[in-house]
Every structure is written in structure tokens, then in C-alpha cells.
Amino acid sequence: MGFPQGFLWGGATAANQYEGGYNEGGRGLATSDVITDGNMNTPRRITIKLKDGTLTSINRFEELPDGAVGYLDPDTYYPSHVATDFYHHYEEDIKLFAEMGFNSFRMSISWTRIFPRGDEEQPNEEGLAFYDKVFDTCLSYNIEPIVTICHFDVPKFLADEMDGWSDRRVVDYYVNYCDAIFKRYKNKVKYWMTFNEINLLNGYTTLGCRKTDDQTRYQALHHMFVASAQAVQLGHVINPDFEIGMMVAYILSYPETCNPADQQEDIDAARNLKHFFCDVQCRGYYPSYKLAEFERKGIVIKKEPYDDEILFNGTVDYIGFSYYNSGVSTSRKDAETTDGNVARVVKSKYLKESEWGWPIDPMGLRIAMNQLWDRYQLPLMVVENGLGAKDTVEADGSINDDYRIDYLADHIAEMKKSIELDGVELWGYTPWGCIDLVSAGTGEMTKRYGMIYVDMDDKGNGNLKRSKKKSFDWYKKVILSNGEDLSK
Ligand code: BG6
Image 1 (tube, helix red, strand yellow):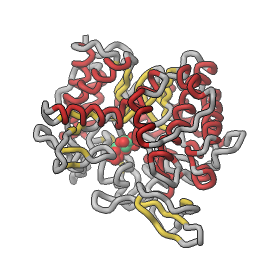
Image 2: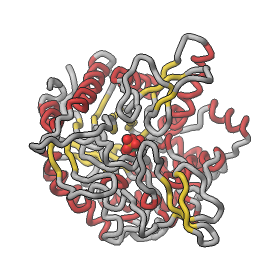
Image 3: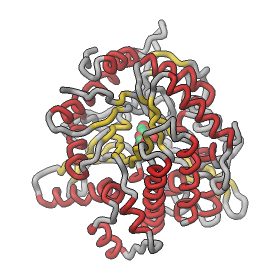
Image 4: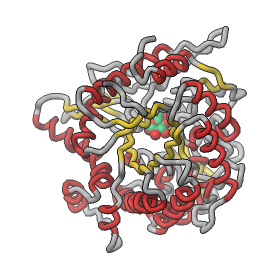
């Protein structure tokens, strides 16, 4: 049986880490444009201007002081500004994707390229025209674009002037943005996702909110849920063939032991980290455990009278999810932790870790797929998966990334099992950073995911030249065999 005919094979990227051209084509600034570079030991920072005009910077997960705004310091290096320059390389890059055999390509639209401040009524034609060219190029190679509408950025104007998603008005601005791109690309794009990793958003960079407390975060998320549900309904009116999905970071976790306390810990973690978001977006209402938590913690969500109806009528068509690593749930307080996608996780004695400390767990992907399928019976897409690793360019220019091939092969094998043995409906696989791009977590270029290498270092030095890694030909063979031939 294996992968179905027409299975979507491709790769995934996001504008804030790949596109660049930050001040071209009438584009406005996004919150992601004021985040510095960093590395494993030096976390990324946001440059800010305080109410009294003082310039400073804070850790990107910290709260902004009252009245502070994001600030672009001309003497600071910001990786999003050029990133790996899809803006000027899209033709070359899409051609390489086609050569690998992609029949799909996940990317995000930069909101501020379409609405530079975020609150305009009319879109920026130059921005729309750019994505026309991108989609036309994809379609000329029979590559289906899969578009994330908002991936880790918020118009800086909306963040600074309105405190981002905590302000109800942003729902309307987002829906207006969706209206513009849905109408413009209704015959070019079929697959959409409303927000990237909605379960990981917090603070200034991804919600545009100064504060990071639960009350602010959940109110902002409520606005996003409503905005997403409105977008789903609107999209289906504009083109009933649209498939509009949610996108969740699937942080799989296992209870450490059969101690009931570990089991409860695992249930709580799963609800908190992922189920809540999927429950609202797939079932269309707030789950009882979250309402109980809100009550317990005194969190009050301000809703408009018709919000519940919007949520109920705007459930998603499919679930896109990222899967990189798993973690462990334990009631022990002294458990050793390691890094994982955004959040640190408790270490597993059964799993090896990547150079960045992320546990590698291919079997976990099948488990994740089964959990999602059993809970929602909605089609799935693995829209991110991959190994962030250091690559070495040999004297002859070759890059022998066998470690990446091993990682991808093992995960694809598990996806295949979930289709064959579990009957899960899986639409596609777009591994992360199919071409090297900036790491969201650390801001580095050294942490590479691509099958295509880009000559650029952590400080933005390099000629941006593209070259094929060993995994390029390997993935090409995988796609050509529709996932049957995973051999090296
Ligand atoms: C996901 C994000 O969390 O993981 C991507 O959707 C991100 O934007 C990816 O790049 C990998 O994480 P990192 O920190 O290695 O770039």
C-alpha cells in the first residue's frame, strides 16, 4: 500500500527566516525584524525603545516595559532582514525544488508585505505581485503551494500601537488580510494554514503583546482562534475547494513511569501544550478542562456574543503539525532536562539527541499521528520535521549529510507505517528548511536543516550561493519512488 498516489512531497520554509527583502517592495516592519541573532549560549534579544527614549534590548521571551516599542537599531545585525534571500532567489530555488521532485512547497506570506502597517484597508499591490510571481513559478513546475498565513510575525505597527493580538481590532485586520490573499490567489493556492504553531505563541515577537502573563496570552489566543475560524469560513466562500488547516507543534510526551502521578502529569502536559489548541480549532469549542483552569486561575476571556458560533462554524479542514522531538512527563522535581522545539523537555534514557540537544524519536512520529488521528479523525500533514545540524563543506564542495538522511529516512518509514498499519489519512510531508534558512530558536545559520546549502554564516556573511547536499539526491529518489526507496 504505502503512500497514496498524489501524496504531497515537498519542503517547508517561513518568510521571517527565509524571505529577506525586509525593506523592499513597500514591505512594512514585522516584530521578527527587531530580533537579533544568537546561539545556544546567547539567547536572541529584541531591541526596544523605552518610553523615555532610551534604547536597550531584552531577552525575546521577556515582557516589554510599559510603553516600550520594538526598535530597529542600524548598528545591530538582524537575521530576518536578508535571511537566505528567497526574495531575490525564488526562481532559482523553486527550480531546485522541482529538480528534487517536489509537488508541494510550504512557505508563509509576510503579512507586512501585503499590509505594511497591518491596519490599512487596501493591500500593497507590489507585495501581492511578488507572491503572484512565486506561485506562478511553483505552478509552472506543478508544485502546489501550501501557504501559512502568519508564521511567527506580527506587523510591528499593530504590536507597538495596539499591543498586538490582545486587541480585538487585530482580528478584523487579520481577516482583511486573509480576504485580500484568498481573493488574489484563489486559483493559485489551495492549501492554507492560519497560524504557525499556534500553541507556542507568546509575548512580543509572536503575539505582538508586551505582556506574557496567562491573562494576556489567553485573551490574545482567543482572538486568534476567532480570527482563524472567521478565515476558514471566509475562505470556503471565496473558494469552496480551499483546504484550510491549523498548525500545531506536536510536542509528544511519554509518562516516565506507570506511577499514576506521572500519568496525570502527562495528561496535564498534553492538554496544556497541544490538545487545548487542537480541541478549539478542530472541535470548535473550549474544552472543559481549560474552562476549569481559567476559573481556578481567575482568567477571564472577554468574548463577543457571537464568538462561540464563529468558533463552532469555523473548524479546520485538516491538521498540519510539526514534529521534531519528544519529551517525558514526570512528577519528579529533579529530572534532568534537555532542549527541544522551543521548550525544554525532560531527557529520555532511550533516545539520542541532536547537536542542539533535541531528542531524536522517529517512532514518536507514528505515535503522534495516531494520537491526532484517534482524537480528531481529520486529515493530517506533517508540515515540519527535520534535523538541525552543522554541515561541513568539503574541499571539493560536497556536503555529506548522512546524519540528515538517516533522520529523515527513519521518520518517513514511521509515517509509512502509520498509513499502512494504522490507516491514518496523511496528505503530505514537507520537511523543515528544505533549503538552509535562519534558525527561529537561536537565530543561527550554523543550525542547518536543508537539502540545499546556502553560503551564509551566523553574522550574515556569505555569497548566498546555493549548492546541493547529499540529501538532495537522496530525497529526490525518495519522492520518485513515492516513499518506497529510503536507501542511502
Ligand atoms: C518550528 C518553527 O518551531 O521549528 C520553525 O515553526 C523553526 O519556524 C523550526 O525554524 C525549527 O526550529 P529552530 O529553532 O531549529 O529553527
